Amino acid sequence: MRLIKVNAPQGKGKDVAQTAFSVGIEKVSFFQIESLHADGQTENKDSVDIETSTPKGKRFIDALLKADFYNQKEFTINIRQPRSIISSDSLRELTIPLTEPAPDILEELWQFSHITYGFIGRVLIAAFLMAYGLIEQKILLIIAGLLFLPLLPLLLAVSFGIRTKHWQLVGQGALAFIVAIVLLIIGGAAIAAFAQPPIKYSDFNSLLVGFLISSAVGIAAVLANIDDVGRRELIGLAATAQIAIIPVWFGICAIFGFPPTYSQSEITSRAVSFFLNILTIIVTTLIVYIISGAASRSLEKVKSKK
Image 1 (spheres, rainbow, N blue to C red):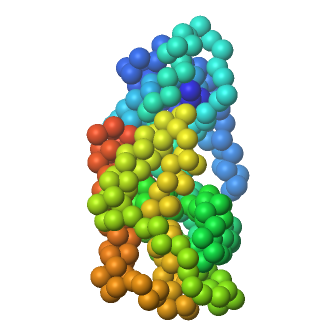
Image 2: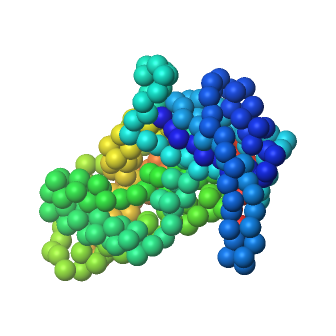
C-alpha cells in the first residue's frame, strides 16, 4: 500500500490528478498550499494526495515521471508505506504487494550504499566473527558474522543503477562494496594475528555450484527487493555466504600462509569463484530488474545534484 503526496506548481495539480485517473486510481484529494523558503520567498502550490495499492502507486509514479509537464525542480513527490488504509476500496486489491514504486527501491539502495562509521563498524565486526569462526570451524559464529553484512544491497545498487542509468548509484554501490571487501580482508588478518594456525574451515563450493547458488540468490534478491513482503534479511545471508567468506579466508591466509593441503589451482579457484559469484549476482539481478519492470527507465528524469 502507498500514500503518495505530490506538490506541484500552481495550475499543475489537475494534470497530476488526471495522470492518477489514467492508471486506474479512482479518487484523489486536491488542495492548495503555501511554501515558505528560507530567503523569505513564498510560493503557492497545488498538492495532490493519493491512497492506493502498491502496483497502482508504481504505475502512477512511472506515468508522472514520464509526463511532459513533470519537472523535478518544480515538483516534490513523497511516497509512504502505511501499516493500513481503511477506505471503500477492496482489501484484496489494496494489499497487493508487488511491484514497489521505482523511487522507493532507488532511495533504499542509496541508503545502503553510504559509507558511514556504522557501515565500517558492521563490516569489521562481521569480519572478526567470521574470521574466528573460520579458524576454529565454528559455524554459528560464521553465520552471526554474515548477518551483519550489507553486501547484497551494494550489488543490487550496481545492477539497478545500470538499468536506470543512475551512474552515481553504480559508482557509490561499487565503492562501498570494494571498501567492504578490503575491511573483510583486514578483519580476517587482524584476528589471525592473535590466533593460532591452522585454519580449520575448508567447506568451499565448486565453481559450478557457486554459480548456480549465486544465480538463485540473485533472482530471489530482486524478488524480495521489489516486493512489500519480501524477506530481504534472509536473502542477504545467503548472498554474503557466497561472497564474504572468501576475502576473510584470504586475510587469514595472509598471516597463516595457505594450508599445505591446498594446491595452487585450488587457491586460484577460490579467487576465481569470488569474482564469478559477484558477476553472476550483478548480471542475474539486472536481468530480473528488466523482466519485472521494477527498474523503470522513467527514473532517468530523477537526478541527484552533485
